[in-house]
Image 1 (spheres, rainbow, N blue to C red):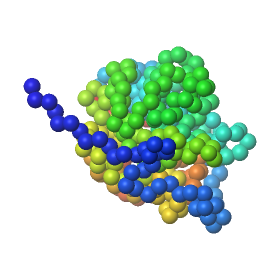
Image 2 (cartoon, rainbow, N blue to C red):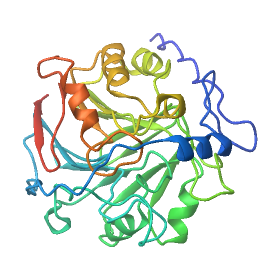
Image 3 (cartoon, rainbow, N blue to C red):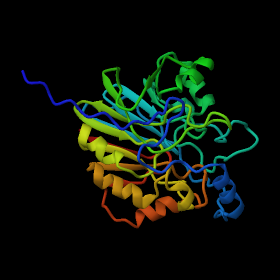
Image 4 (spheres, rainbow, N blue to C red):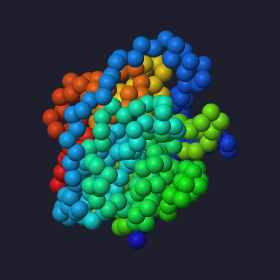
Length: 318
């Protein structure tokens, strides 16, 4: 039987000490961070008490994929007895401390006690708004959850007693609970302190389930990796695409898409449906909390690009 053609590797992204964005602009350095902070005029945002928490079902029919936006980049995917959670955060701040740093401006859309069993957690990188140790420790207490992380991130989880954990580089795969998980490129950076910049990898994930493809982009700037992902895996039934923390563009464009970029990514991927993430809970850049969703709404695409409220769900037939 003829063998399928071997897929070309994703571009080199490690120089022996640090990871980087291949053939793309890198995240801005300290001088530009200071320039941004001293010259920016962030639009004001305050706490918004408009969330009505929902309670996801304990299971969904075999021919359905249920997508629930909990908050920020935390999405619950439910499919035929397998429950996947992306970048979970329930903490009040996206910060190493409880008294400073970006604070929550909307409540989670699902209460902790209303979560169903979580089989798989996907962590896209180690920033505090995506890797929240308090939430991960609570998930690990169940003893039922597997954690899938980019290369280099497992060490942090293991020091906190969080596991079992499996690392993936771009192009690597693992089978968990009858589901194939693939690490794929993203354009971003990593750091949890001043001395560990880009010592660990960042990535997106492809989830293969029941012959369908789900793409979780994590945190990423716009780039050629969307075409590479489609070429390798085909068009996703569902894409989770970030739309927020994009202003000012001179600073954020290498690492964060804006709504226009997300629309372009949706088209390049050929996604059946895209759901917006990375918005509406923490103000991490200069644009106000709900500006990203309003800008995205100006691009009329019917129901192919969806903005969910915290706690709102979408059900796709497979």
